[in-house]
Length: 298
Image 1 (cartoon, helix red, strand yellow):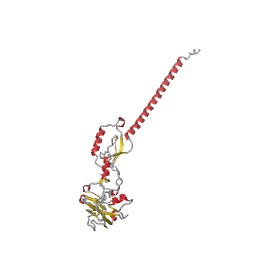
Image 2 (tube, rainbow, N blue to C red):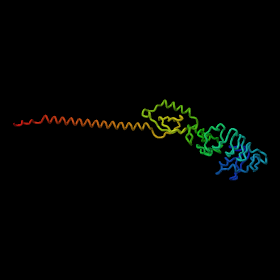
Image 3 (cartoon, rainbow, N blue to C red):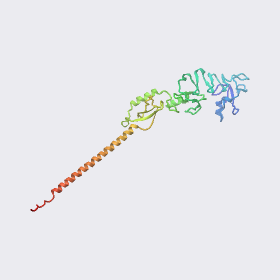
Image 4 (cartoon, helix red, strand yellow):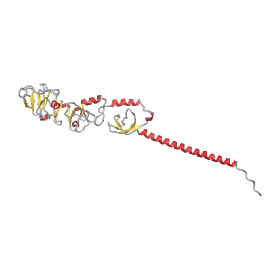
């Protein structure tokens, strides 16, 4: 459980005395993995030296043998570790891996971000206080780095890498594209130009909603994708069925009905004419066969 060089999580020469159960562990993560409860790092008051086993007040150097418990020590988080240029961020409430000058704390996101994101990211209030939407684990206090998506949502860096590796390219929360897709959209343009739709679908249109710019538009239907007229993205969702195809079917049915009515009417007229001709012929026959009358006497 413990050694003079620490554990798999931290390099340190002391054990923390858990304020919850009184047991000794190298770090809170080792404690949480073994126990059915979590250690509150901020309530740690005592540590045990891994060299001389002296239990003492939490501090950076052993009061008995002068061994250094860790190159870095935070007396708020009670974090002992080798020097990784850590710093304690007061608004975040925890220690971060630095150096400090490469990061700034965004007040709205309530998170430390790289300096190149200052004024160059979409703020989402308290975004790091949400769990990672991929693994559903905590982001704010996680030792795994966070990846900021263009939409402002956060994923663990490892979760983002796994997501992209499997071909997923959209934020699990808002469906916005998680990275630049310009090259991919151009490839779809080429594929569509080389793959015309069958005759019965040519001219068919459909309503879509763009997940990237939120534009509602009506575009040509194609099985390979529907392109947003606002931003050119293929990250779109179909809203309803084929519009033109459905209307064309109704018009065709109406036209067929009208043609059938005309044929029936024409047939009726022909039958009436034929019947009239037969009656006239019958009258002529009757007139020719009628016996002559004797002359009227004078």
